[in-house]
Image 1 (cartoon, rainbow, N blue to C red):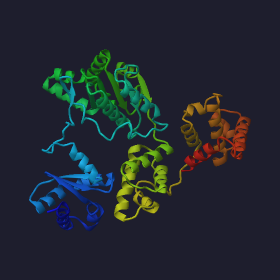
Image 2: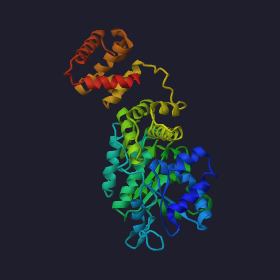
Image 3: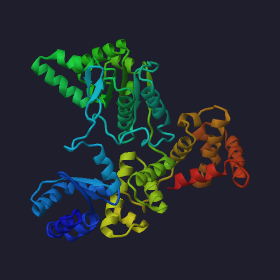
Image 4: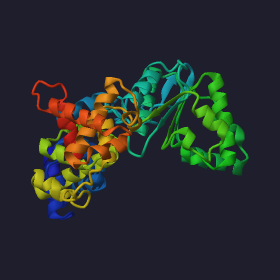
Length: 452
């Protein structure tokens, strides 16, 4: 019986196993590709479809077993060529020719591969104003893990901004290019649990050998050890042992070291001794780039109006942005259409497009500062360099133009005389009417962000 005939019979059974909408949305688009030993390959329309069909692998395997009296392992691919390429890397027993979970290390066995998420690479990391420095520091370490120029690297920022992605990207790169390196990635919570188990079993040597003999320690969410005195004591000695041995340490946290008030001072000092990098929420342009990249890698087509709608309304972090994308894709499959109205309907419980944003002087300052990649304190300062003075004048101009604030009130906000504000607003207004002005595009982009 041909692979197509097997799948035809299996499909007939599947129609009775799931709802009509589930079958038409997820299973009907799958096409039988080929069979190799106990492996059954199905072609899916795109990567996004594959993610959703992972749930149905057990059902498909059981259904195929009913048809053929053989148990198959289900594989999803995007083309027959992909399946053939995958099989060409296997021997006749169906096992991969190259192990995926170990790396040879001059006689020792370092288990680096398989530890890191294969999707979290530098190539898949979208760089913007809010994360450019963090990405550059991570790449520099990954490309030269023997260097101790900045050790430790301390990445901090809110949830869903890409800290863990950069951790795994470092691990993926170093394990690929420097397979002899012993890399250890651990979440802080796991570190704490392992230490508690060590205390219970009174087996400190095993714990210390694991954490004090690696070439690169990647520890995620270090804030979990704050307030745990015995845990901090152990990590303090682990940190010192690695640092003195020349091993690199990368730490992530939700706040800078000095804000970890329940962390011992000696640890805060050591965390601050290397490179501290802040990761900010993605700006509008970066959010657009992330959504386009998501559509590209999933081989899906998303109208620009939908991309703009999501980017304009989901601003907090990358995780929520990707969640909104997945929601729209799933809803569009069920609805049978993919347009802006469908996207709005899919996200109606996530965003409220009808809600009017409260525009305030502080919000205008934040938007202008973010756009020009400077701090709020810079705009409010007395610094006179053009890179600071012009954004300050633009902020004054928008407060006058959008909020219609009196010059004197704007002067109070910036601690300036009202005549200084008048001059600034007049200067920017004049430039806004000059079609040759070099800030026309800046003004348009900032106004769009303020009015989103």
